Image (cartoon, rainbow, N blue to C red; front, side, top):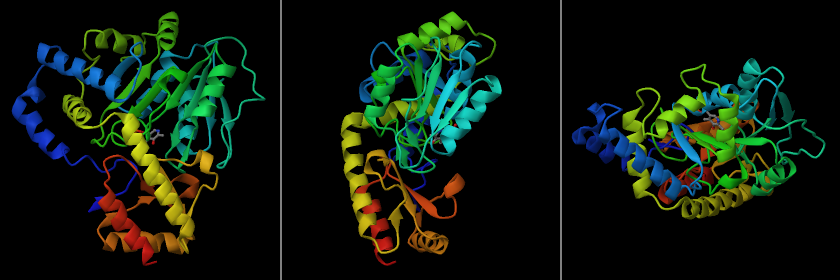
Length: 353
Ligand SMILES: *Cc1c(COP(=O)(O)O)cnc(C)c1O
């Protein structure tokens, strides 16, 4: 079965060998305060900086998931005098705001339309170190934040923190890391790995904010997570297998700017294909906000189930629609681990519809 599900998604084929190597190397049984672990941890962090173009001054920590990052941001980067300002147009951005508002009920939501860019011209934010929250790639509807939008937010709100959920784009998009303070993702999407590991990336300004807030109330308070990573350790016994697999995958892949170039080409291919298709259409019409990594396809409900059925008969799994788009869309992951042959096989299926 070939899967185009946008998370968990197809793992890189080389993961099979890496699993065996992990077992045979003995790393799975080492203590997470040992030299062997610390060496692996350090190497993985170096590879993350190098392959994902993460500036040297940014701190990278290991956590369990993107969902955990939603909570860490509210706990450790948002003061009681501050608020989160959540800009979103889909289910994941919406869920993040719900998690944040359980901890900081004063946080604000700024939903925007499917075909629109996030807009903030009419928003004023008093004080400093409030946190603007964006979803880089909204996995539920296949929209994407443009680099221009993020740069505009950075310019307009220089005294605030900017946090970006890049769960379905980190590893597949060349993200403008320096234009935001916190980035996070889990590994089961564009990094082509099994689920069970999250990454949080923090700018020097974000780290300074966390130090001022001095939250150490929780096991996963950012400062204790950070204290440990400075020693190439983790705050709890981590998913050592996942970190090992991440290290091996990062060693084997090209720099993300090359990967992103390929995915953009493939995405243009998908959107062109759908434009010409008699019954399947792109959900998003505005090319400026269409995702490169998750292609959302719209059709009537019957056609959606027919497409899934035809794909399944050809040994291909499509991603279900999500949230309000559940019935009349399906999603196609355009993640780096998926190869051209698989994409062409899926196009063949659609050509018979
Ligand atoms: C998948 C996803 C999440 C949740 O990831 P978990 O690993 O389940 O915590 C959050 N945000 C976005 C944009 C996602 O695509």
